[in-house]
Image (cartoon, rainbow, N blue to C red):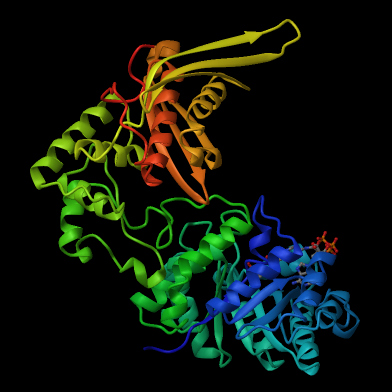
Length: 540
Ligand SMILES: CC(=O)SCCNC(=O)CCNC(=O)[C@H](O)C(C)(C)COP(=O)(O)OP(=O)(O)OC[C@H]1O[C@@H](n2cnc3c(N)ncnc32)[C@H](O)[C@@H]1OP(=O)(O)O
Ligand SMILES: CC(=O)C(=O)O
Protein backbone atom coordinates (compact mmCIF):
# COMPACT_ATOMS: atom_id res chain seq x y z
CA UNK A 1 0.00 0.00 0.00
CA UNK A 2 1.14 3.52 -0.80
CA UNK A 3 0.53 6.44 1.51
CA UNK A 4 -2.84 7.57 2.86
CA UNK A 5 -4.99 9.95 0.84
CA UNK A 6 -7.51 11.77 3.04
CA UNK A 7 -11.08 11.96 1.82
CA UNK A 8 -12.96 15.19 2.35
CA UNK A 9 -16.64 15.04 1.48
CA UNK A 10 -18.51 18.24 0.69
CA UNK A 11 -21.80 16.70 -0.49
CA UNK A 12 -23.62 18.46 2.34
CA UNK A 13 -22.20 21.89 1.38
CA UNK A 14 -20.87 22.14 -2.19
CA UNK A 15 -23.18 19.28 -3.26
CA UNK A 16 -26.23 21.27 -2.19
CA UNK A 17 -25.12 24.07 -4.50
CA UNK A 18 -26.16 21.73 -7.36
CA UNK A 19 -29.33 22.77 -9.14
CA UNK A 20 -32.35 20.90 -7.79
CA UNK A 21 -30.52 19.56 -4.71
CA UNK A 22 -32.02 20.44 -1.34
CA UNK A 23 -31.40 18.45 1.80
CA UNK A 24 -33.22 18.79 5.10
CA UNK A 25 -31.30 18.73 8.37
CA UNK A 26 -32.35 15.11 8.90
CA UNK A 27 -31.30 14.19 5.33
CA UNK A 28 -27.90 15.68 6.05
CA UNK A 29 -27.60 13.80 9.34
CA UNK A 30 -28.45 10.49 7.65
CA UNK A 31 -25.87 11.09 4.92
CA UNK A 32 -23.23 12.16 7.46
CA UNK A 33 -23.70 8.92 9.42
CA UNK A 34 -23.28 6.84 6.24
CA UNK A 35 -20.20 8.82 5.17
CA UNK A 36 -18.67 8.19 8.58
CA UNK A 37 -19.38 4.45 8.38
CA UNK A 38 -17.83 4.40 4.94
CA UNK A 39 -14.58 5.87 6.26
CA UNK A 40 -14.65 9.48 4.98
CA UNK A 41 -12.11 11.53 6.97
CA UNK A 42 -13.73 15.00 6.86
CA UNK A 43 -17.45 15.70 6.45
CA UNK A 44 -18.15 19.30 5.53
CA UNK A 45 -21.65 19.86 6.88
CA UNK A 46 -22.42 23.34 5.57
CA UNK A 47 -21.76 27.04 5.97
CA UNK A 48 -23.00 28.15 9.41
CA UNK A 49 -22.77 31.84 8.40
CA UNK A 50 -25.07 31.21 5.45
CA UNK A 51 -28.37 29.92 6.81
CA UNK A 52 -30.11 28.57 9.93
CA UNK A 53 -30.46 25.07 8.44
CA UNK A 54 -26.70 24.62 8.30
CA UNK A 55 -26.34 25.93 11.85
CA UNK A 56 -29.06 23.47 12.97
CA UNK A 57 -27.15 20.62 11.33
CA UNK A 58 -24.06 21.35 13.39
CA UNK A 59 -26.19 21.51 16.53
CA UNK A 60 -27.72 18.11 15.69
CA UNK A 61 -24.32 16.59 14.99
CA UNK A 62 -23.17 17.45 18.50
CA UNK A 63 -25.60 14.74 19.71
CA UNK A 64 -24.40 12.15 17.21
CA UNK A 65 -21.06 10.56 17.91
CA UNK A 66 -19.15 9.64 14.76
CA UNK A 67 -16.65 6.79 14.73
CA UNK A 68 -14.06 8.27 12.43
CA UNK A 69 -14.91 11.45 10.51
CA UNK A 70 -14.20 15.01 11.61
CA UNK A 71 -17.24 17.26 11.07
CA UNK A 72 -16.07 20.42 9.36
CA UNK A 73 -17.77 23.78 8.90
CA UNK A 74 -17.21 25.95 5.84
CA UNK A 75 -16.87 29.71 5.55
CA UNK A 76 -14.87 32.52 4.02
CA UNK A 77 -12.04 34.66 5.24
CA UNK A 78 -13.08 37.84 7.01
CA UNK A 79 -14.44 40.70 4.93
CA UNK A 80 -12.12 43.45 3.67
CA UNK A 81 -11.30 46.01 6.35
CA UNK A 82 -12.92 43.91 9.08
CA UNK A 83 -10.83 42.38 11.86
CA UNK A 84 -11.08 38.59 11.99
CA UNK A 85 -12.42 38.56 15.56
CA UNK A 86 -15.16 41.02 14.53
CA UNK A 87 -16.24 39.08 11.44
CA UNK A 88 -19.72 37.53 11.65
CA UNK A 89 -18.85 34.66 9.33
CA UNK A 90 -15.79 33.61 11.35
CA UNK A 91 -17.76 33.93 14.58
CA UNK A 92 -20.48 31.70 13.18
CA UNK A 93 -17.81 29.07 12.48
CA UNK A 94 -16.83 29.14 16.15
CA UNK A 95 -20.47 29.06 17.29
CA UNK A 96 -21.09 25.94 15.22
CA UNK A 97 -18.96 24.07 17.76
CA UNK A 98 -16.90 22.16 15.19
CA UNK A 99 -13.29 21.15 15.70
CA UNK A 100 -12.27 21.86 12.09
CA UNK A 101 -13.07 24.76 9.77
CA UNK A 102 -12.51 25.16 6.05
CA UNK A 103 -12.25 28.76 4.94
CA UNK A 104 -11.85 29.89 1.39
CA UNK A 105 -9.84 32.89 0.35
CA UNK A 106 -9.00 34.55 -2.94
CA UNK A 107 -5.81 33.48 -4.71
CA UNK A 108 -6.56 34.92 -8.16
CA UNK A 109 -5.67 38.63 -8.25
CA UNK A 110 -8.63 39.30 -10.58
CA UNK A 111 -11.01 38.15 -7.84
CA UNK A 112 -9.30 40.32 -5.24
CA UNK A 113 -9.56 43.49 -7.28
CA UNK A 114 -12.81 42.82 -9.18
CA UNK A 115 -14.96 40.67 -6.85
CA UNK A 116 -13.74 41.63 -3.39
CA UNK A 117 -12.93 45.16 -4.57
CA UNK A 118 -9.92 45.41 -2.30
CA UNK A 119 -6.13 45.53 -2.59
CA UNK A 120 -3.82 42.57 -2.98
CA UNK A 121 -2.19 43.36 0.37
CA UNK A 122 -5.53 43.59 2.19
CA UNK A 123 -6.45 40.14 0.83
CA UNK A 124 -3.19 38.73 2.22
CA UNK A 125 -4.07 40.32 5.57
CA UNK A 126 -7.58 38.78 5.45
CA UNK A 127 -6.18 35.31 4.77
CA UNK A 128 -3.50 35.48 7.45
CA UNK A 129 -5.72 37.03 10.16
CA UNK A 130 -8.61 34.64 9.51
CA UNK A 131 -6.43 31.53 9.69
CA UNK A 132 -4.57 32.81 12.76
CA UNK A 133 -7.85 33.70 14.52
CA UNK A 134 -9.36 30.25 14.05
CA UNK A 135 -6.09 28.57 15.03
CA UNK A 136 -5.93 30.70 18.19
CA UNK A 137 -9.35 29.22 19.10
CA UNK A 138 -8.00 25.68 18.80
CA UNK A 139 -9.52 24.66 15.46
CA UNK A 140 -7.95 22.56 12.75
CA UNK A 141 -7.91 24.95 9.79
CA UNK A 142 -8.09 24.03 6.14
CA UNK A 143 -7.36 26.97 3.87
CA UNK A 144 -9.09 26.62 0.49
CA UNK A 145 -7.34 28.69 -2.16
CA UNK A 146 -10.28 29.51 -4.42
CA UNK A 147 -9.46 29.66 -8.17
CA UNK A 148 -5.89 28.69 -7.38
CA UNK A 149 -5.07 27.21 -10.79
CA UNK A 150 -6.49 30.14 -12.75
CA UNK A 151 -4.79 32.52 -10.33
CA UNK A 152 -1.48 30.72 -10.72
CA UNK A 153 -1.73 30.96 -14.53
CA UNK A 154 -2.28 34.74 -14.42
CA UNK A 155 -0.10 35.78 -11.52
CA UNK A 156 1.90 32.89 -10.06
CA UNK A 157 3.86 35.08 -7.66
CA UNK A 158 0.71 36.43 -6.02
CA UNK A 159 -1.06 33.07 -5.97
CA UNK A 160 1.92 31.57 -4.08
CA UNK A 161 2.04 34.54 -1.70
CA UNK A 162 -1.56 33.79 -0.69
CA UNK A 163 -0.57 30.21 0.17
CA UNK A 164 2.44 31.42 2.12
CA UNK A 165 0.20 33.80 4.10
CA UNK A 166 -2.05 30.87 5.07
CA UNK A 167 0.94 28.67 5.89
CA UNK A 168 2.66 31.27 8.05
CA UNK A 169 -0.59 31.84 9.94
CA UNK A 170 -0.66 28.13 10.82
CA UNK A 171 -3.08 26.48 8.37
CA UNK A 172 -3.12 22.69 8.83
CA UNK A 173 -4.06 22.04 5.22
CA UNK A 174 -3.80 24.09 2.06
CA UNK A 175 -6.36 23.02 -0.51
CA UNK A 176 -5.90 24.08 -4.12
CA UNK A 177 -9.24 24.67 -5.82
CA UNK A 178 -9.98 24.37 -9.51
CA UNK A 179 -13.07 26.46 -8.89
CA UNK A 180 -14.04 27.05 -12.53
CA UNK A 181 -13.32 23.40 -13.29
CA UNK A 182 -11.58 24.08 -16.59
CA UNK A 183 -8.01 22.94 -15.89
CA UNK A 184 -6.39 20.04 -17.70
CA UNK A 185 -4.67 17.13 -15.90
CA UNK A 186 -1.13 18.06 -17.02
CA UNK A 187 -1.66 21.65 -15.78
CA UNK A 188 -2.88 20.37 -12.42
CA UNK A 189 0.05 17.97 -12.13
CA UNK A 190 2.71 20.59 -12.95
CA UNK A 191 1.19 23.26 -10.70
CA UNK A 192 0.72 20.96 -7.71
CA UNK A 193 4.29 19.71 -8.10
CA UNK A 194 5.62 23.31 -8.15
CA UNK A 195 3.53 24.30 -5.12
CA UNK A 196 4.68 21.19 -3.26
CA UNK A 197 8.28 22.38 -3.67
CA UNK A 198 7.59 25.71 -1.98
CA UNK A 199 4.95 24.88 0.67
CA UNK A 200 5.47 22.54 3.63
CA UNK A 201 1.81 22.31 4.68
CA UNK A 202 0.00 19.20 3.41
CA UNK A 203 -1.87 19.90 0.19
CA UNK A 204 -5.37 19.00 -0.90
CA UNK A 205 -7.18 19.27 -4.22
CA UNK A 206 -10.74 20.53 -4.78
CA UNK A 207 -11.61 20.10 -8.46
CA UNK A 208 -14.84 20.94 -10.26
CA UNK A 209 -16.05 19.09 -13.32
CA UNK A 210 -16.76 21.76 -15.93
CA UNK A 211 -14.36 20.19 -18.45
CA UNK A 212 -15.40 16.64 -17.41
CA UNK A 213 -11.87 16.12 -16.16
CA UNK A 214 -12.35 16.44 -12.42
CA UNK A 215 -11.54 12.79 -11.67
CA UNK A 216 -8.43 12.89 -13.87
CA UNK A 217 -7.46 16.20 -12.24
CA UNK A 218 -7.84 14.78 -8.73
CA UNK A 219 -5.66 11.78 -9.62
CA UNK A 220 -3.05 14.02 -11.26
CA UNK A 221 -2.93 16.20 -8.13
CA UNK A 222 -2.45 13.18 -5.88
CA UNK A 223 0.29 11.85 -8.12
CA UNK A 224 1.99 15.24 -7.89
CA UNK A 225 1.86 15.15 -4.09
CA UNK A 226 -1.61 16.20 -2.87
CA UNK A 227 -2.70 14.17 0.17
CA UNK A 228 -6.37 15.09 0.36
CA UNK A 229 -9.18 15.02 -2.20
CA UNK A 230 -12.30 17.11 -1.71
CA UNK A 231 -15.39 16.09 -3.65
CA UNK A 232 -18.98 14.91 -3.42
CA UNK A 233 -20.85 11.64 -3.67
CA UNK A 234 -22.04 11.13 -7.25
CA UNK A 235 -20.32 14.39 -8.23
CA UNK A 236 -23.29 16.55 -7.33
CA UNK A 237 -22.55 20.27 -7.11
CA UNK A 238 -22.92 23.64 -8.79
CA UNK A 239 -22.93 23.85 -12.63
CA UNK A 240 -21.38 20.54 -13.79
CA UNK A 241 -20.65 19.42 -10.26
CA UNK A 242 -17.69 18.64 -8.03
CA UNK A 243 -15.31 15.77 -8.50
CA UNK A 244 -17.13 12.47 -7.96
CA UNK A 245 -15.58 10.77 -4.94
CA UNK A 246 -17.35 7.57 -5.96
CA UNK A 247 -15.00 7.38 -8.95
CA UNK A 248 -11.96 8.94 -7.30
CA UNK A 249 -11.82 6.47 -4.41
CA UNK A 250 -11.63 3.18 -6.35
CA UNK A 251 -9.24 4.73 -8.87
CA UNK A 252 -6.91 5.84 -6.09
CA UNK A 253 -7.18 2.66 -4.10
CA UNK A 254 -7.53 -0.11 -6.68
CA UNK A 255 -5.58 1.38 -9.58
CA UNK A 256 -2.93 3.55 -7.95
CA UNK A 257 -2.58 1.64 -4.70
CA UNK A 258 -3.21 4.55 -2.32
CA UNK A 259 -4.83 3.91 1.03
CA UNK A 260 -8.27 5.58 1.30
CA UNK A 261 -10.64 3.25 3.19
CA UNK A 262 -10.55 -0.35 4.42
CA UNK A 263 -11.44 -3.00 1.80
CA UNK A 264 -14.68 -3.87 3.66
CA UNK A 265 -15.67 -0.21 3.56
CA UNK A 266 -14.87 0.00 -0.14
CA UNK A 267 -17.42 -2.79 -0.65
CA UNK A 268 -20.08 -0.34 0.59
CA UNK A 269 -19.32 2.18 -2.19
CA UNK A 270 -22.24 1.20 -4.45
CA UNK A 271 -24.68 1.28 -1.54
CA UNK A 272 -23.37 4.68 -0.41
CA UNK A 273 -23.74 6.14 -3.90
CA UNK A 274 -27.32 4.82 -4.24
CA UNK A 275 -28.23 5.94 -0.73
CA UNK A 276 -27.16 9.52 -1.41
CA UNK A 277 -28.94 9.52 -4.79
CA UNK A 278 -32.11 8.33 -3.07
CA UNK A 279 -31.98 10.94 -0.30
CA UNK A 280 -31.11 13.72 -2.77
CA UNK A 281 -33.94 12.44 -4.99
CA UNK A 282 -31.66 12.22 -8.02
CA UNK A 283 -31.85 9.56 -10.71
CA UNK A 284 -28.59 7.64 -10.95
CA UNK A 285 -27.37 7.27 -14.53
CA UNK A 286 -27.19 3.58 -15.40
CA UNK A 287 -23.78 4.08 -16.96
CA UNK A 288 -22.24 5.76 -13.91
CA UNK A 289 -18.72 4.31 -13.71
CA UNK A 290 -18.06 1.75 -10.96
CA UNK A 291 -21.48 1.89 -9.23
CA UNK A 292 -24.06 2.29 -12.03
CA UNK A 293 -26.52 -0.48 -12.75
CA UNK A 294 -24.89 -1.00 -16.15
CA UNK A 295 -21.28 -0.55 -14.98
CA UNK A 296 -20.75 -4.33 -15.19
CA UNK A 297 -23.65 -5.26 -17.50
CA UNK A 298 -22.56 -7.28 -20.53
CA UNK A 299 -24.70 -7.29 -23.64
CA UNK A 300 -22.68 -8.36 -26.68
CA UNK A 301 -22.60 -12.17 -27.13
CA UNK A 302 -18.83 -12.12 -27.73
CA UNK A 303 -18.28 -10.26 -24.47
CA UNK A 304 -20.50 -12.53 -22.41
CA UNK A 305 -18.91 -15.66 -23.80
CA UNK A 306 -15.46 -14.34 -22.80
CA UNK A 307 -16.52 -12.94 -19.41
CA UNK A 308 -17.91 -16.33 -18.45
CA UNK A 309 -14.50 -17.83 -19.18
CA UNK A 310 -12.61 -15.08 -17.35
CA UNK A 311 -14.25 -11.84 -16.12
CA UNK A 312 -10.99 -9.92 -16.63
CA UNK A 313 -11.57 -10.13 -20.40
CA UNK A 314 -14.17 -7.32 -20.27
CA UNK A 315 -14.07 -5.95 -16.72
CA UNK A 316 -11.54 -3.43 -15.46
CA UNK A 317 -12.06 -4.45 -11.83
CA UNK A 318 -13.94 -7.12 -9.92
CA UNK A 319 -17.36 -5.47 -9.27
CA UNK A 320 -17.56 -7.09 -5.83
CA UNK A 321 -14.64 -4.98 -4.61
CA UNK A 322 -16.90 -1.94 -4.68
CA UNK A 323 -20.18 -3.75 -3.92
CA UNK A 324 -21.55 -3.77 -7.46
CA UNK A 325 -22.44 -6.88 -9.42
CA UNK A 326 -22.01 -8.40 -12.84
CA UNK A 327 -25.11 -8.61 -15.00
CA UNK A 328 -25.77 -10.30 -18.30
CA UNK A 329 -28.27 -8.77 -20.72
CA UNK A 330 -30.27 -10.74 -23.22
CA UNK A 331 -31.20 -8.99 -26.46
CA UNK A 332 -30.82 -9.23 -30.23
CA UNK A 333 -27.05 -8.93 -29.67
CA UNK A 334 -26.93 -12.06 -27.48
CA UNK A 335 -25.46 -15.47 -28.08
CA UNK A 336 -26.33 -18.70 -26.28
CA UNK A 337 -23.80 -17.77 -23.56
CA UNK A 338 -25.94 -14.75 -22.59
CA UNK A 339 -29.02 -16.88 -22.25
CA UNK A 340 -27.45 -19.65 -20.20
CA UNK A 341 -25.77 -17.11 -17.92
CA UNK A 342 -29.03 -15.20 -17.56
CA UNK A 343 -30.91 -18.35 -16.62
CA UNK A 344 -28.32 -18.95 -13.90
CA UNK A 345 -28.48 -15.32 -12.73
CA UNK A 346 -32.29 -15.48 -12.54
CA UNK A 347 -32.00 -18.83 -10.77
CA UNK A 348 -34.23 -20.57 -13.33
CA UNK A 349 -33.60 -24.28 -13.50
CA UNK A 350 -34.27 -24.89 -17.22
CA UNK A 351 -31.38 -27.28 -18.02
CA UNK A 352 -31.03 -26.19 -21.64
CA UNK A 353 -28.22 -27.45 -23.82
CA UNK A 354 -26.31 -25.06 -26.09
CA UNK A 355 -28.44 -25.90 -29.12
CA UNK A 356 -31.73 -25.37 -27.28
CA UNK A 357 -30.38 -22.11 -25.94
CA UNK A 358 -29.46 -21.03 -29.49
CA UNK A 359 -33.04 -21.77 -30.61
CA UNK A 360 -34.44 -19.57 -27.86
CA UNK A 361 -31.95 -16.81 -28.67
CA UNK A 362 -33.14 -17.01 -32.27
CA UNK A 363 -36.74 -16.52 -31.11
CA UNK A 364 -35.70 -13.60 -28.91
CA UNK A 365 -33.97 -11.96 -31.87
CA UNK A 366 -37.08 -12.40 -34.02
CA UNK A 367 -39.25 -10.90 -31.31
CA UNK A 368 -36.82 -8.00 -30.75
CA UNK A 369 -37.08 -7.40 -34.49
CA UNK A 370 -40.85 -7.09 -34.00
CA UNK A 371 -40.22 -4.50 -31.26
CA UNK A 372 -39.97 -6.47 -27.99
CA UNK A 373 -37.12 -5.56 -25.71
CA UNK A 374 -36.07 -8.16 -23.17
CA UNK A 375 -33.18 -6.48 -21.38
CA UNK A 376 -35.71 -4.19 -19.69
CA UNK A 377 -38.28 -6.96 -19.19
CA UNK A 378 -36.58 -9.82 -17.43
CA UNK A 379 -39.85 -11.28 -16.14
CA UNK A 380 -41.13 -11.73 -19.72
CA UNK A 381 -37.80 -13.28 -20.62
CA UNK A 382 -38.08 -15.68 -17.68
CA UNK A 383 -41.54 -16.76 -18.85
CA UNK A 384 -40.22 -17.31 -22.36
CA UNK A 385 -37.40 -19.49 -21.04
CA UNK A 386 -39.72 -21.52 -18.83
CA UNK A 387 -42.20 -21.96 -21.64
CA UNK A 388 -39.49 -23.14 -24.03
CA UNK A 389 -38.25 -25.62 -21.44
CA UNK A 390 -41.84 -26.90 -20.92
CA UNK A 391 -41.78 -25.70 -17.30
CA UNK A 392 -44.57 -23.18 -17.40
CA UNK A 393 -48.19 -24.10 -16.81
CA UNK A 394 -50.90 -21.91 -18.28
CA UNK A 395 -52.91 -21.11 -15.17
CA UNK A 396 -55.32 -18.87 -17.02
CA UNK A 397 -56.15 -18.13 -20.64
CA UNK A 398 -58.03 -15.33 -22.27
CA UNK A 399 -61.33 -15.90 -24.01
CA UNK A 400 -61.99 -12.21 -24.78
CA UNK A 401 -61.94 -8.69 -23.44
CA UNK A 402 -63.92 -5.60 -24.29
CA UNK A 403 -63.27 -2.01 -23.28
CA UNK A 404 -65.68 0.93 -23.18
CA UNK A 405 -64.62 4.50 -22.75
CA UNK A 406 -66.93 7.43 -22.18
CA UNK A 407 -66.27 11.14 -22.24
CA UNK A 408 -69.15 13.42 -21.31
CA UNK A 409 -69.90 17.09 -21.94
CA UNK A 410 -68.77 17.94 -18.40
CA UNK A 411 -65.30 16.58 -19.37
CA UNK A 412 -65.51 13.52 -17.09
CA UNK A 413 -63.89 10.41 -18.55
CA UNK A 414 -64.52 6.85 -17.44
CA UNK A 415 -63.44 3.45 -18.68
CA UNK A 416 -64.89 0.01 -18.14
CA UNK A 417 -63.33 -3.33 -19.05
CA UNK A 418 -65.06 -6.72 -19.40
CA UNK A 419 -62.84 -9.77 -19.31
CA UNK A 420 -63.69 -13.44 -19.98
CA UNK A 421 -61.04 -15.93 -18.86
CA UNK A 422 -60.63 -19.66 -18.40
CA UNK A 423 -59.26 -20.32 -14.93
CA UNK A 424 -58.84 -23.87 -13.66
CA UNK A 425 -61.31 -25.11 -16.21
CA UNK A 426 -63.96 -22.57 -15.23
CA UNK A 427 -65.11 -19.64 -17.30
CA UNK A 428 -64.77 -16.44 -15.30
CA UNK A 429 -66.46 -13.31 -16.54
CA UNK A 430 -65.77 -9.98 -14.81
CA UNK A 431 -66.10 -6.27 -15.36
CA UNK A 432 -64.36 -3.38 -13.63
CA UNK A 433 -63.97 0.36 -13.96
CA UNK A 434 -60.76 2.34 -14.02
CA UNK A 435 -59.43 5.83 -14.50
CA UNK A 436 -58.27 4.80 -17.96
CA UNK A 437 -58.64 1.77 -20.24
CA UNK A 438 -55.46 0.05 -19.06
CA UNK A 439 -56.33 0.60 -15.42
CA UNK A 440 -59.84 -0.80 -16.05
CA UNK A 441 -58.36 -3.83 -17.82
CA UNK A 442 -55.91 -4.39 -14.97
CA UNK A 443 -58.74 -4.15 -12.40
CA UNK A 444 -60.97 -6.58 -14.33
CA UNK A 445 -58.16 -9.07 -14.81
CA UNK A 446 -57.27 -9.08 -11.14
CA UNK A 447 -60.94 -9.35 -10.13
CA UNK A 448 -61.19 -12.45 -12.28
CA UNK A 449 -58.09 -14.03 -10.82
CA UNK A 450 -57.89 -12.90 -7.21
CA UNK A 451 -60.26 -15.51 -5.80
CA UNK A 452 -58.15 -18.26 -7.37
CA UNK A 453 -54.78 -16.63 -6.60
CA UNK A 454 -55.07 -14.41 -3.48
CA UNK A 455 -51.40 -13.34 -3.74
CA UNK A 456 -52.44 -11.02 -6.60
CA UNK A 457 -54.16 -8.70 -4.12
CA UNK A 458 -50.76 -7.50 -2.91
CA UNK A 459 -49.32 -6.94 -6.36
CA UNK A 460 -49.43 -3.42 -7.78
CA UNK A 461 -48.23 -1.54 -10.84
CA UNK A 462 -45.25 0.74 -10.17
CA UNK A 463 -44.45 1.98 -13.67
CA UNK A 464 -46.04 2.00 -17.10
CA UNK A 465 -44.11 3.20 -20.15
CA UNK A 466 -45.21 3.38 -23.77
CA UNK A 467 -42.78 3.86 -26.63
CA UNK A 468 -43.80 4.39 -30.24
CA UNK A 469 -41.67 2.06 -32.36
CA UNK A 470 -42.40 3.26 -35.86
CA UNK A 471 -42.83 7.01 -35.78
CA UNK A 472 -43.70 7.21 -39.49
CA UNK A 473 -46.81 5.10 -38.79
CA UNK A 474 -48.27 7.91 -36.62
CA UNK A 475 -51.42 6.62 -34.84
CA UNK A 476 -51.12 3.29 -36.70
CA UNK A 477 -47.56 2.78 -35.42
CA UNK A 478 -46.50 -0.18 -33.30
CA UNK A 479 -46.04 0.55 -29.62
CA UNK A 480 -44.03 -1.17 -26.94
CA UNK A 481 -45.42 -1.18 -23.41
CA UNK A 482 -43.11 -1.85 -20.49
CA UNK A 483 -44.75 -2.47 -17.15
CA UNK A 484 -43.08 -2.63 -13.77
CA UNK A 485 -44.96 -4.46 -11.02
CA UNK A 486 -44.14 -4.94 -7.36
CA UNK A 487 -45.05 -7.08 -4.38
CA UNK A 488 -43.40 -7.23 -0.97
CA UNK A 489 -40.57 -4.92 -2.10
CA UNK A 490 -39.72 -7.13 -5.09
CA UNK A 491 -40.08 -5.57 -8.55
CA UNK A 492 -40.28 -7.13 -11.98
CA UNK A 493 -40.78 -5.88 -15.54
CA UNK A 494 -42.71 -7.23 -18.50
CA UNK A 495 -43.20 -6.21 -22.11
CA UNK A 496 -45.91 -6.21 -24.77
CA UNK A 497 -45.88 -5.05 -28.39
CA UNK A 498 -48.76 -4.35 -30.78
CA UNK A 499 -50.15 -1.73 -33.11
CA UNK A 500 -52.88 -1.38 -30.45
CA UNK A 501 -51.73 0.12 -27.15
CA UNK A 502 -54.41 -1.77 -25.19
CA UNK A 503 -53.35 -5.08 -26.69
CA UNK A 504 -49.68 -4.32 -25.94
CA UNK A 505 -50.69 -3.41 -22.38
CA UNK A 506 -52.67 -6.64 -22.04
CA UNK A 507 -49.64 -8.70 -23.02
CA UNK A 508 -47.45 -6.93 -20.49
CA UNK A 509 -50.15 -7.11 -17.77
CA UNK A 510 -50.80 -10.80 -18.36
CA UNK A 511 -47.06 -11.52 -18.24
CA UNK A 512 -46.68 -9.62 -14.98
CA UNK A 513 -49.40 -11.79 -13.39
CA UNK A 514 -48.10 -15.03 -14.89
CA UNK A 515 -44.65 -14.17 -13.53
CA UNK A 516 -45.96 -13.61 -10.01
CA UNK A 517 -47.93 -16.87 -10.12
CA UNK A 518 -44.83 -18.74 -11.23
CA UNK A 519 -42.73 -17.08 -8.52
CA UNK A 520 -45.36 -17.90 -5.90
CA UNK A 521 -45.42 -21.49 -7.10
CA UNK A 522 -49.21 -21.53 -7.70
CA UNK A 523 -48.99 -25.12 -8.81
CA UNK A 524 -52.05 -26.22 -6.89
CA UNK A 525 -54.30 -24.77 -9.58
CA UNK A 526 -55.89 -27.30 -11.90
CA UNK A 527 -54.60 -27.40 -15.47
CA UNK A 528 -57.23 -25.65 -17.65
CA UNK A 529 -58.90 -27.79 -20.27
CA UNK A 530 -58.24 -25.35 -23.07
CA UNK A 531 -54.78 -23.79 -23.38
CA UNK A 532 -53.22 -21.39 -25.84
CA UNK A 533 -49.56 -20.97 -26.62
CA UNK A 534 -49.50 -17.46 -25.29
CA UNK A 535 -51.91 -15.61 -23.05
CA UNK A 536 -53.63 -12.70 -24.64
CA UNK A 537 -53.36 -13.42 -28.34
CA UNK A 538 -56.68 -15.06 -29.02
CA UNK A 539 -60.21 -13.85 -29.69
CA UNK A 540 -59.97 -10.14 -29.34
C1 LIG B 1 -16.30 28.74 -4.56
C2 LIG B 1 -17.35 28.47 -3.58
O1 LIG B 1 -18.03 27.52 -3.67
S1 LIG B 1 -17.53 29.61 -2.38
C3 LIG B 1 -19.06 29.20 -1.67
C4 LIG B 1 -20.21 29.72 -2.44
N1 LIG B 1 -21.43 29.38 -1.73
C5 LIG B 1 -22.34 30.27 -1.41
O2 LIG B 1 -22.25 31.43 -1.75
C6 LIG B 1 -23.53 29.73 -0.68
C7 LIG B 1 -23.81 30.45 0.62
N2 LIG B 1 -23.82 31.91 0.50
C8 LIG B 1 -24.66 32.72 1.19
O3 LIG B 1 -25.50 32.27 1.98
C9 LIG B 1 -24.49 34.19 1.01
O4 LIG B 1 -23.89 34.47 -0.24
C10 LIG B 1 -23.60 34.78 2.16
C11 LIG B 1 -24.40 34.70 3.48
C12 LIG B 1 -22.31 34.04 2.32
C13 LIG B 1 -23.27 36.24 1.88
O5 LIG B 1 -24.45 36.94 1.61
P1 LIG B 1 -24.41 38.53 1.39
O6 LIG B 1 -23.74 39.14 2.57
O7 LIG B 1 -25.80 38.95 1.11
O8 LIG B 1 -23.44 38.80 0.16
P2 LIG B 1 -23.55 38.32 -1.34
O9 LIG B 1 -23.89 36.88 -1.40
O10 LIG B 1 -24.40 39.24 -2.14
O11 LIG B 1 -22.05 38.55 -1.85
C14 LIG B 1 -20.97 37.83 -1.33
C15 LIG B 1 -20.04 38.79 -0.59
O12 LIG B 1 -18.95 38.00 -0.05
C16 LIG B 1 -17.72 38.60 -0.45
N3 LIG B 1 -16.72 37.54 -0.54
C17 LIG B 1 -16.55 36.65 -1.53
N4 LIG B 1 -15.51 35.87 -1.25
C18 LIG B 1 -15.02 36.23 -0.05
C19 LIG B 1 -13.96 35.82 0.75
N5 LIG B 1 -13.19 34.79 0.39
N6 LIG B 1 -13.74 36.45 1.92
C20 LIG B 1 -14.54 37.46 2.29
N7 LIG B 1 -15.58 37.91 1.57
C21 LIG B 1 -15.81 37.30 0.42
C22 LIG B 1 -18.04 39.22 -1.80
O13 LIG B 1 -17.11 40.20 -2.19
C23 LIG B 1 -19.41 39.84 -1.52
O14 LIG B 1 -19.19 41.01 -0.77
P3 LIG B 1 -20.04 42.40 -1.06
O15 LIG B 1 -21.43 42.07 -0.62
O16 LIG B 1 -19.38 43.37 -0.20
O17 LIG B 1 -19.92 42.62 -2.51
C1 LIG C 1 -14.02 26.74 -2.16
C2 LIG C 1 -14.70 26.07 -3.26
O1 LIG C 1 -15.70 25.40 -3.04
C3 LIG C 1 -14.16 26.22 -4.59
O2 LIG C 1 -13.26 27.00 -4.79
O3 LIG C 1 -14.66 25.53 -5.49
